[in-house]
Length: 254
Image (spheres, rainbow, N blue to C red):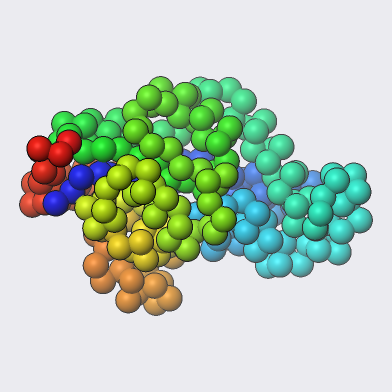
C-alpha cells in the first residue's frame, strides 16, 4: 500500500534544471571569455543531475578541464577548492535568472498541481526530497504557490551524502514516519531514481528532455527494471493514479 508520496523538485515539479544548465553554460562563457555560452557545460551538467550543486560543479569542471582557470580565482571568491568558484559563479547567474518569481511559475510542469491533488485526495502524506538548498527550495515553492503542500521538506542541509546515495529518501521516510516500502517517489534523474530505489521505494521516473538519455542508459538498466517510466507529463498522472488504485493507502492510518 502507499502511505506517502515523495517528490523530487528540480526537473520533477519545475523545470529549473534547464535554467541551472544554462547558468553553467553562461558561467563557463564568463570564465573563459567566450563569445557565447558553452553548450558542453550543459551536457556535462546533465550527467550529474540530481547529485547536488557541489558534485555537479566538480563534474562540469573536470569534463571541461576548468581547474587551471578556476584555481587563480579562489581568493576572490573565498573558495576552498576550484570547483567552489564555479559553484559561486553559476549560483549567482542562476539567482539572477529566477529573481522574478514569474520565471519559476512559467517553468512549472503542467502536471504539478494535479499530482499534489491526487496525493491529497488519496490521503497520502506528502514530502519533498531535493538536493537543492533550503533557501532556493523555499523560494521556488513560494513562487509555485505550493509551499504549504508538503508535510515534510528535506533539502541538502539535512543530509551528508548526495543522490544517488539513498540517505535523502531514508530521511524523508523517517520524518514522515512511513516505512520506505510504503512510499511512492516521483523523480526525473538517474541519480534520483537510484537513490529512491536503494532506499527501498517504488519509483515513477519522468523522462524529461534533460533526463531521457540518462534514464535509458545501460548504466542503470538493471535498476530501471522495476521503475515506471513516463515520457509525457500526462503519463505521470496516469501512472500515479493507477498505482494508487492498485496499492491503496490504509485509510485508518492516514
